[in-house]
Amino acid sequence: MGRQPCCDKLGVKKGPWTTEEDKKLINFILNNGHCCWRALPKLAGLRRCGKSCRLRWTNYIRPDLRRGLLSHEEEQLVIDLHAHIGNKWSKIASRLPGRTDNEIKNHWNTHIKKKLVKMGIDPVTHQPLNQDPNSTDNPKNSCSVSDDISMVTKSSSTKNIETNGTTTEDESISTITDQNSSMDNDNHQLSNIYNDEEFFSYLWSDESTKAETPWSDSNYDVGGTLYHDNNVSCAGADFPICSPERINGVDWTFQDYCQDFGVHDFGF
DNA sequence: AATAACCCCAACCGCGGCTTG
DNA sequence: ACAAGCCGCGGTTGGGGTTAT
Image (spheres, rainbow, N blue to C red):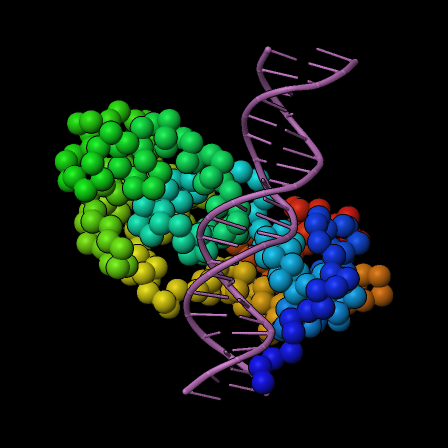
């Protein structure tokens, strides 16, 4: 009955990944994809459990990741999405290309949360801290916050966030869009997301996946049919290279990604 | 210079939903 | 139908790095 055990708990390594382990993981996934996380460690010669490999790949190694702090616009988007859907980090991350749920969660807990509290905003309800969360009063009367955050707060506080997963939309999204109207091209993607009225119904639904992110947008699906364009030879092996992807107005290739987060150290 | 306090984030843990046999 | 296991998600933590004293 049932499946085989996921992994042999005995002899499974824990803790920080070494460069050597990363190299093995990258080499294996680039050559074979990650069709099955359970089998991957053994096939790749890693003494890790599949879960750990998946985490390492999705949160750190994945070539489409953007490193570094979240931009101001990304931060605003996170705040607004959080006001709508709460701690659905994976869904929030699906709207920030190159960002992981773990990264956003960390950023929320270490930066945004504190920032909101400092501004007198409850990071859970997105209401002013001294105001009854159920109240529909205009928060502007009871709270003074910075322009950026107050805009977000205003938008979220004029909305009924219900626990059953439905919400009554109003002009809040366009409010934010107005604010973003002065953004440069790099930020248009984000403002478009704000402006996407269908987006929030997408988020509420179970249909939402990461299918719209650049990563799973076919170009980076190493588990499937991807790397269709070119190959590059390295250390006697052919590594597939994806088509350039446009993120925030910049054309990226797999090599760019690798260089950006240091995979060149592995010999790519 | 030493050390205490704080910050940050990679990685682990546990749970729920889904899949498999 | 059901038990066992996988996968993905959100919460939490440990330790390295940084700043303050």
